[in-house]
Amino acid sequence: MAIDGVKPREMRRDPFKQTIIWEIVPERTALVVIDMQNAFLHEKGLFYVPAGMGLVPKINQVARLCRERGILVNWVVRHPYRRDGLDIGYERDLYPIMVGHPAGYTEDGWGAQLVPELDVNHDKDLIVPKTRFSALIPGSSNLDRLLRYHGRDTLIIMGVATNICCGTTARDAMMLDYKVIFASDGNAAFDESVLGSKEPSIIQEAELMTLRACFAMVCTTDELIGELNKLPMLPASG
Image 1 (cartoon, rainbow, N blue to C red):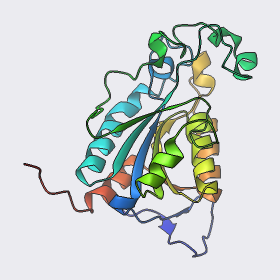
Image 2: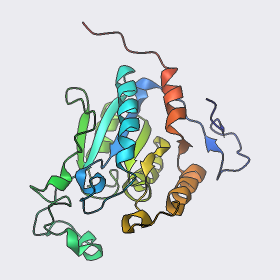
Image 3: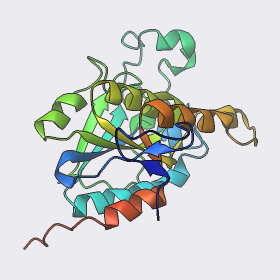
Image 4: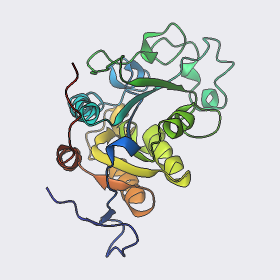
């Protein structure tokens, strides 16, 4: 499946619709899956994203293809906060309900746990805790150090939420000179649907438009899978 885009340093007819195309070099690429935890995916989670659970099969498929081709898989998770909220920062002013709430991401709360439907390979994958929306701002996590240690300069981003943690991480990644590949239907937005709205997500589309124009290669999961399937698989072990 062809992707409507251009190679680096070529002019795009319409940067809001036509994406840049980054080459996927397995030994220099990492999959970064963000915040696929109960707080965001479970219907009783404090920050429930209704479209989030539908991402799981796509993410599992991409993660498997990545492992088979030597692409490093990272599961980025919101680190549990103290139940008294003293280490939350100004987020507690925006959402005071999160302090001590087990359906959020407090210590000993089930909201911080990855949903069990995810295909996590604990022998090969990395689980990276973060304390802020972006996984790449200073002090949030050690993701940047790990990626550079493993020689990765291209990031495939999937997870929740498009307009918060995934989008801010993608922006910061590009500013730190990573090549970003953002799966348009492999990320879901935190939007009016959390309040029961059934309207199409204009937030999702607006975020994708901005990322496509200035920060990332934006493609569908099927397009991404098509590119991954072109890459050689690692030799079978054993």
